[in-house]
Image (cartoon, rainbow, N blue to C red):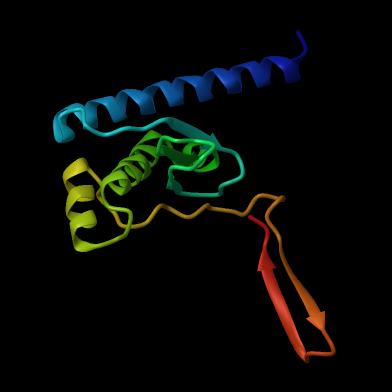
Length: 149
């Protein structure tokens, strides 16, 4: 097996272990704080997201008659900041299953779940895939900026 293939296999094993630990944490939080009443359908580790994570609820539709719940956590942030930061972000996102906004009730629950900070740690350095660009619109006399995330 080539060195690149070995590295890729090891990376996939670390991702699988991290996902398993996140599922364990979800089940622990669900038992201890919610009497196992919460539903979470999927946890993803995103290689595109630079830091933090997000919670997404998909509503009922003709295609999918059930409401689904997804939490996405940044794999880049996990690699850079470690398990404790990943756990902090994950607990924050679990609180969003109950409170989709950042209300006082949300922050009270997030704190009970073990969130110690309000914001995820930013990346130490932007990866090469991250770029800022500006496009000029001469006819409008304005410049538009965007960030590739």
